[in-house]
Length: 74
View 1: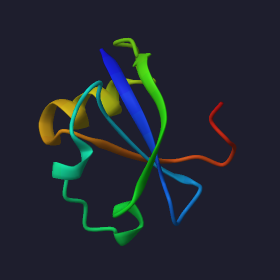
View 2 (view 1 turned 60 degrees about the vertical axis):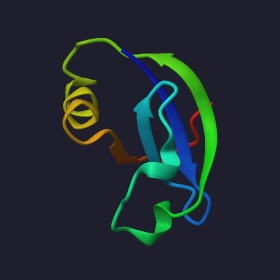
View 3 (view 1 turned 90 degrees about the vertical axis):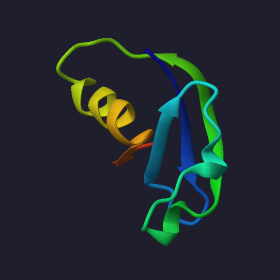
View 4 (view 1 turned 120 degrees about the vertical axis):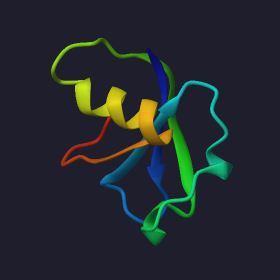
């Protein structure tokens, strides 16, 4: 699966991942920190391994996956 990763403009540790090419303007997230997003990476390949299982499930079910990081994604 290929995904695009967006960072919250107001919280540098919050990220949202969607299926590559998805229109993030149509995604409604209750947390206001996700109201404005900055695209960080596009076309990132994730595998079906245990580390990506939650992200893949969330994207399949709701169209996005929310996650936090403690370090910058480069």
